[in-house]
Image 1: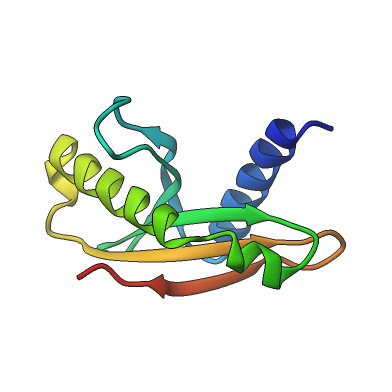
Image 2: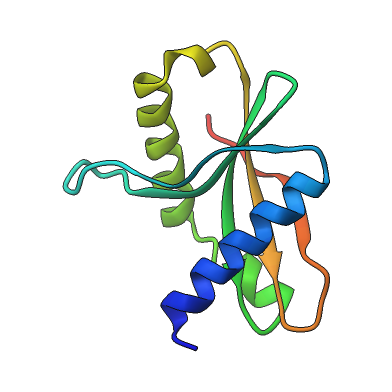
Length: 119
């Protein structure tokens, strides 16, 4: 399986995992235009007026998955979330959070709420 295929599989698995914990999918792979300094958010989920922007990482270990969420990734997700909120104003009153969902072979997914914050 290619890395691209693994990534899409991991995102679908992450979405199912979060749905099992009461989150509802809003968007998968939300992308804003190239050259904007933004990019993509793997998953956007909602529950009770809270919106989470989720970075999904699949690596051999949870430690490697968490380390793969760099400051550059965090800034990209924050910019993309701002573009999402501009495009979908109905969510502007929601609480916003940045979560990570880590996946590793033969392990149960690890959800990290508030994996980082944006000032």
